[in-house]
Every structure is written in C-alpha cells, then in structure tokens.
Amino acid sequence: MELNSIKPAAGAKHAARRVGRGIGSGLGKTAGRGHKGQKSRSGGYHKVGFEGGQMPLQRRLPKRGFKSHLLKFNAEITLSTLSDLGLAEVDLLALKQAGLVSQLAKVVKVIKSGELTKAVKLTGIGATAGAKAAIEAAGGSVA
Image 1: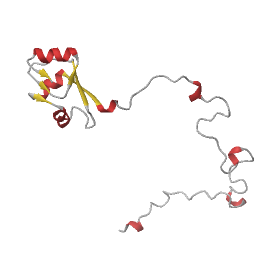
Image 2 (image 1 turned 180 degrees about the vertical axis):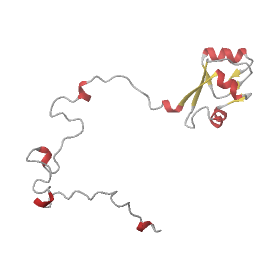
Image 3 (image 1 turned 120 degrees about the vertical axis):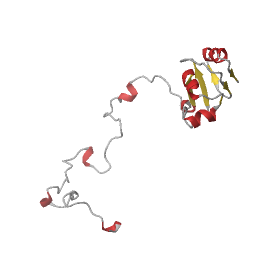
Image 4 (image 1 turned 30 degrees about the horizontal axis):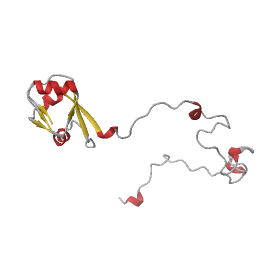
C-alpha cells in the first residue's frame, strides 16, 4: 500500500457543495445567501462580539481581578510530602526529580500542612513561619 493510494471508504465523504453553478444545482443565482443585506455580500460580516452598534457585553461588564502570568513559576509543598520524600537534604532539583513540583518552578515554599518527624535540611527553598517552626522543632533547618 502506498500513501498516495489511500482513499476513504465509499460513501464516507460527501461531495463538496458547488454553489453558484446554475439553477439545476439548487444553489444558483444567490448561492444560498438569500437576497441583499450584509451577510449576502462578499467580505461583509461583523467582527466577533459586535452587537449591531449596541454596547457589547464584554464592554458593558466591569473588569475585575488579575491573575499573574508569573504564577506558573511558583510552587508549594507540604510538610507531609517532605516527610514522605525521605531525604535528609532537600533542594529544588531534588523536588523536580521526585516530580513534586513542575519543571518550570523557580520558587518553592513549604507550607504547614501535615506532620514532620524526621530532620530535613532545606536549601534554596522558602517556608512559611509555621512550617519553619515545625521543621526546626523536628531538628531540621531552613537555609
């Protein structure tokens, strides 16, 4: 079998509509566009969101909020996942290799959620005040 000989099954493809090809085709004269008006003209149609001159919905509604496009570079990790990791020294590379943070992450912060029993030394990773206290209580350090 050659790539240039592949064809769809018989009846799977409909013939294209041939508009403006005379009365017999059923789509002659106005070619299915009706009579007159903006939509019948070539190149005649409105832009997306246009409401005939009425103030469009996206301009009537108030603008609210903001979502930073830099959020994809931030990540967070809990105390319980730190203890499950089972490493004595944890840095950004170790978390990426374990698949706990995304490969894009540049800033990682430990949040106080769960328990930490083993001593863990964090390098290049931030921690909330509560998480820092829990890490130091378990004998670890945050650098």
